[in-house]
Length: 233
Image (tube, rainbow, N blue to C red; front, side, top):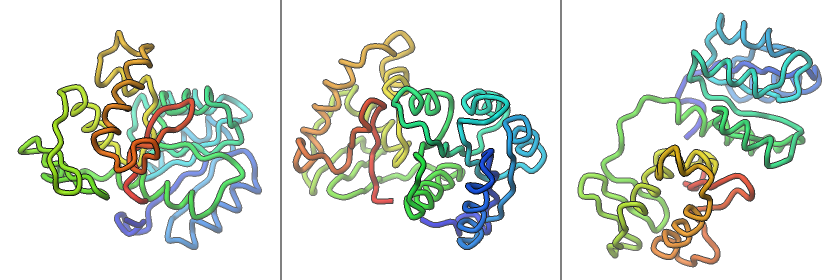
């Protein structure tokens, strides 16, 4: 997967640091992106509405309003992929951004290859593609029609809850899902604080699909935030 999925995708960078905007413009334009900029939250919302970019890179520490507030306003009318790029490292900040509708979170200072990979994943999730009949990654294969899950060619039996959890992670592959997002989707809105449910079922799922459950390579933990199913991006 690369940026050619959308030829010359347009990216709006919302960040008050001119040095960061310059660095991102140079990096992104060298990789085939069209870049526009905004130095504040309000300006960013106006630019997003007028330019309709295919992707937004959003800083949280903006001079006029918090980036999470920008994100929440943007999500009232747009599903554009948003990758947060922020100096804030606390789990609470990451969780608030992801729960607020961000597709991913990258911490400053950032690795350029990692950022480009995260952008590619975000763009991929924006594409209106039909569900694959069979999902394959590493040792795992899931046949959605037959509801068959196999590891290294051998079928494994999942409970209804385990299957729902796996399906959610696959549908959002390579994207961080917070504990709250997963609990709401699988167990319902009244279970969003029941993180022990999630720990138990993730452990069970890893026992069934990971080659070495204690060292998972597919279902990875984002400490203090949630989980991500890795496809190799």
